Image (cartoon, rainbow, N blue to C red; front, side, top):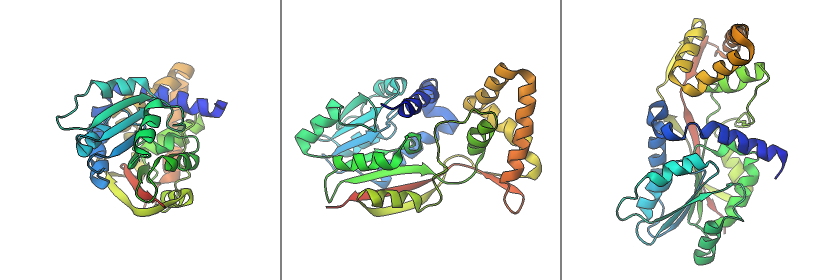
Length: 295
């Protein structure tokens, strides 16, 4: 494992371990809704085999298990043990298929026994899903080329989402503001240019695109004007412990002077990202793509 890859895993653990216990209810609980939507957008076949990658607390895995029913199997894989522990606490509804929870790296499925067992018994999976995690991978394009080999040729399908390219408050806090203080995240989604970026990646990996679309915003939408930079910052950091911790860490390392510099940098970042009408949109819309493995 390369040093860079270890960085990505370390950042994932640092971000999601402390959030695990409250992940399902954070930010209004929108992750729960998205998990159900994933199964609505791509229902697995009855009795089928599903591989849910970066499964977290099981918000896609468990609805998939309900959908495959008796005789079906869903394997949920995640690198964060705390998230998996939350998933394991949840009961399976009566009539659900078998669920296997696996602690492991989704970018290398070759060493995961439960995944390999399904490949031996069923030859391949009917569906692979990756929800709210694709941009957390070091090399997303390489991951897709690995995953496609675990799908049934001609019928196996993959469903993935990525954040839209909108420069929302979450983006501005995580990227330009962190970069201004030399604390940029290893995660990156600047490579997402528009709705065509993800489908092109799937096509290059050997998929036929069945559907690609932009979702609604999964958090309440809001427009801010040019003079609301500080109001927006206060709103975001007061509502979310994750964003509040960004400023708290700055203050712990540099005192009140660091906070003042952060506020000044934020005002400049805000100004640079206003649209032509002098406004900034905040929300969380996604691009979703569903691809079928070619014969």
